[in-house]
Image (cartoon, rainbow, N blue to C red; front, side):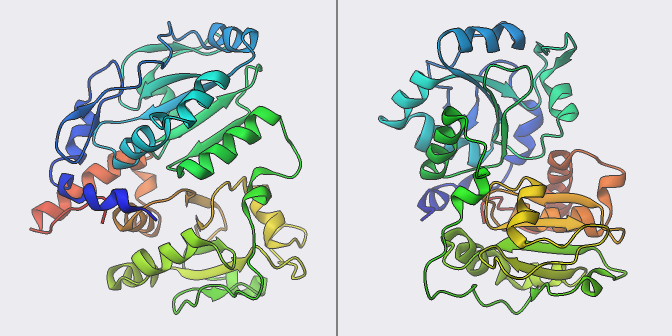
Length: 340
């Protein structure tokens, strides 16, 4: 399903350190051969005054799409190659969206509709962009209508864009994604226990909640390639690891300081737009981080460390911690493969 990853393993060494050295202009994506893939020619060349960009898109019957990227990001590479450059989908995107690429580490100045001015990297911090690619949609209003953190497949992104164009509010996007296969159960797990009572959340450990549903292909992929690893198990041992079944519309979860709700309702409240999603809470039931996109082991494990070791207290930018983690692993003579 994700065959593109096989071609990207060879970029493992040195690619993370490329993040901070990315040029200021244009989408610079290092592919598996080490060459640079430029942004599609039809991306908008903008003065980065978002009020003007939103208005211009609206006058043309389009939505504005901001695309945060960084050099060496394999997920960005796949998004460009498999979605933005797809012969059919690219025509659809050009017809319905003005796309502006923003560099996670860039220094170009952006003027928000409020009049505030930030560099690209400052805006990424303000908006707490923790994954690349991150997509932010504007549909005529000064506030974003939807935000997608992390990679989505071409098929999933097509559904998301249809959702944005239609202006649909009900059901929430996450509910349109969930489709349970009849007679299928949740993928077996020896790590995650089913969340049944609020007493399970009363723990001196941080809590990891996995949101998934039966028949979810990406959920199965996560279990087989990430959760099956011994090093992932070791990191999850620092958590109370629980999961909920999004297809269960009968069981009401008694959550701390909240009215009982189904798993679907909880996912809606959290604004989850991808499954499986892992939401990490501290011992006070405060969300500290989430993995709401397709990732491989390196990023998944980094997120687990980021919360269990309270690294967020000293380093609020997850991407900078990824750099730090990679350097630490190399110092220990360990191989770093970010798409493993």
